[in-house]
Image 1 (cartoon, rainbow over the protein chains, first blue to last red):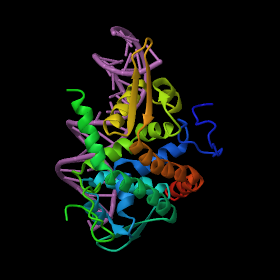
Image 2: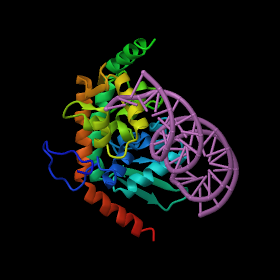
Image 3: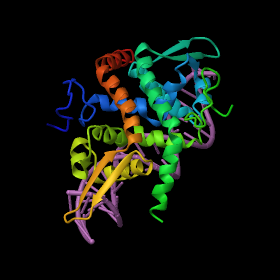
Image 4: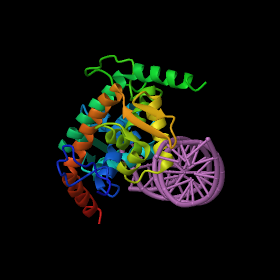
Length: 131
Length: 131
DNA sequence: CCGGATCCTATATGATACTG
DNA sequence: CAGTATCATATAGGATCCGG
């Protein structure tokens, strides 16, 4: 037991995000978090510098972008390439693993974006029913 | 400009999650949020009652589950079926829209779960390099 | 240009008690 | 059972200044 999804095509994976203590839960949060998802999505088409990323990920602060990138780099999803020049130049790009994850992530994002009209309509119905 | 992803297969979608003010960003957060993702994933194989969900989504509190379900219901991703019996019985299930989203979500989750060994190895390398 | 350090606020989350 | 209400806390997030 212990909170896992039982039966039903359980492939006996060693990692189960439904279990409270599973480390995959943390990584999933890095990937799907507010800034993690957008950062990885922004890097899909190639490497970007720090401030380029800041502009693409509209609204992110320096602090959060820095923090987000470090978590993604630590998880092996993003590679950081620093040039010891002055002024410094740092490029970020997805690793092979990062690309795999980002593909799924973008499929999800595009799915949501493509259905937003339905979502907004549902919201109006929900709010109306609560007068 | 305005923070959108330009060029590159831009399908001119009306909604762009990279834009700060786009409502899709909020919905994406409901879907990918700590409890939203797990809740939708748990509902994939059929409807569940409130406390069944609580047990499947290991670690969620009553409050957060309730709050999460309301957001997902409002977005039209989850349907709530309440029976006016005593004691009350309430079943939650994915809507058609919810299923579409959840499929993508689970593809992402399984991708992450299946690559956790790589992630954990990357973490050790990262931490070692920082002694 | 790329962040690190600091301070402060908002929000998310958790624990507990209570109700129909 | 299925929540809501309340209180307390942790964490996320933002603004700003500073240094390599």
